[in-house]
Image (cartoon, rainbow, N blue to C red; front, side, top):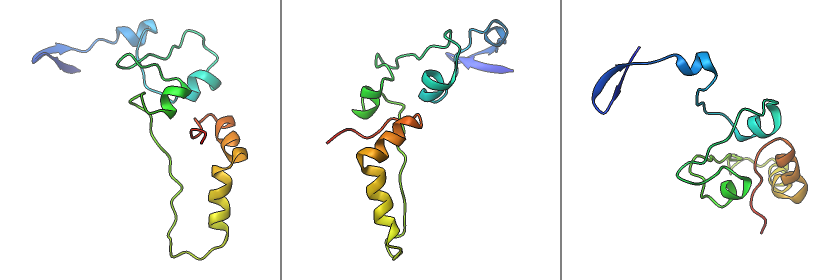
Length: 106
């Protein structure tokens, strides 16, 4: 495979894959909760570590948001109940237990 660095053509090395020293992209929860390998480390990006605090306050640049989306013309009375539950203290505790970063406390 070929890649370009500073406009120069170069061969891509499989060294990282063979030695276990590759850089990859994954979910924060995989590293902090699911992965039992202590050799896997999270890296700061632009000097900002992917801590819960930095994700919540928006300083970590690679965090993404998840949305509860519904059609406002839907008259199902359970929709606002579900949204209220998700935003409640109990709902946010479940979000955290599931490995995601909960919303900031108000």
